[in-house]
Length: 234
Image (spheres, rainbow, N blue to C red):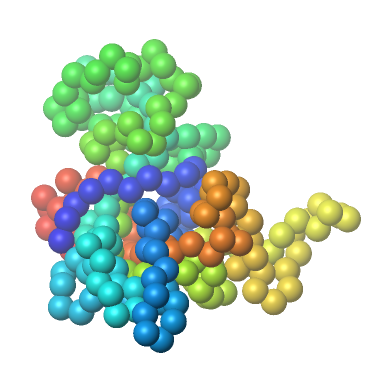
């Protein structure tokens, strides 16, 4: 079991916040390689049983590559945010994912005692220019994930149910009247493929390339991970 950060885009943070997202898929880097056996070319991805943090196996060959997630891991969500105001006892942190939403969703007030003196690059004068998700301090995090299940698979193995669990809808805008209409069979899966390609443009990483990914299923908790775990949250 480990505790570490995981980055999400603003739309996916909203899906987490609203309870619509219980899975995420991440590229495996580097990708497992095809190899020859007596039976031909192999590229089957499996877990090696008996290890807490399973290594990737391809066919009958076990690689030295580790899967970066395993059940019971705790992941604090890193998102685009900025300090908007500094008061005597609290910092006011605003989150890009909820820009324009209610004040309760948009703003968290974090005690100065927890934050300490922020580096100059996080100074409140930078708002409304948000800091990138990768630079968000752990203490600013307002969501954390308890990992339930981890699978290694090809990207296109995602099912319609998986795509819905990824937070994708089975609807899309109808260009004729600008309203959402039900997409045909596998609508959420098709929408997920489009979303994936919008985020992954390099050769070998696109939907049509069908790369190896790790599929993570989790339960979402609202609040800062350190405060929740100190209070006994499971």
